[in-house]
Amino acid sequence: MQPTIRLRLDKAYNVRELGGMSTREDRVTQWHRFLRADDISRLSDHDIDVLLQYGVNTVIDLRSQNEREAAPDALLKIASVKTIHYPMMKGNVQNDVSQYSPEELVRLNRHLGHFYVEMLADKDLIFGLLKEIITAPSGCILFHCSAGKDRTGTLAALLLKIAGVDDVDIVVHYMSSYQYLANSPMFVKLPRGIDSGMMESRPEYIQEALAYLNRYADIEDYLQECGLSREQIGLLKDRLVKVG
Image (cartoon, rainbow, N blue to C red; front, side, top):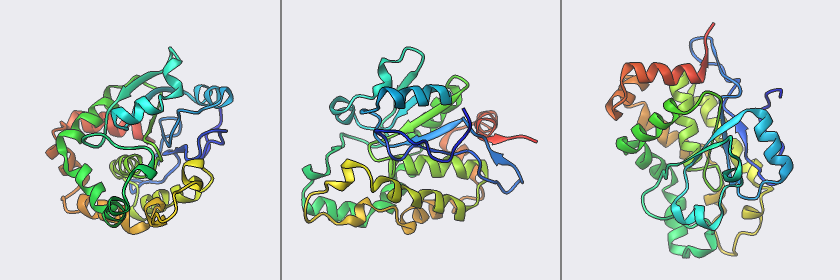
């Protein structure tokens, strides 16, 4: 199947490639290696066929256990797809924003960028997550949370940073989420009174995460502090960037 920036699926709205982006070394991130996604619990048979034809053979579910139980991934029933559950947040997360109090929603909205930094600053979490990626079978890895914006967006930004993509392109890539998610029932039916800013992918949110990474001499310095060896970093880059 030909690579595409966004996969047009019936029941998932923010399934996008990390491939095709230029890097500072005049290379391009590889197609058919990484897909970022929102909720994939309601995929149609057509959607599943599209993902399998695209080459997906590994799913990394970044959601909490109660999110998974409430909305199990549709690809769990596919024997050829390996599913890895790796929560990117501590504790349980509600996948229905209507269950949060207005005070909690205001706090989350104001501190989304800080929330991204907290995930990146948890170096044990990042080490384990990147190790799962490095040791996954060759093929296409799809990683997702519920909206494909915050946890997924933070991991996507980190991977693109490792690949050598410019910050401005990482920000633009992140900002696309809100436009695609506008068609998702999860976002269309927001309870009255919820600040729509929480649903947006504002540039300042991901810029805060990038500013945290830019405190290090380079991205390899950050990765080594997380516990990755030079060999592991090389294997990760090989999955991300087309050589030659």
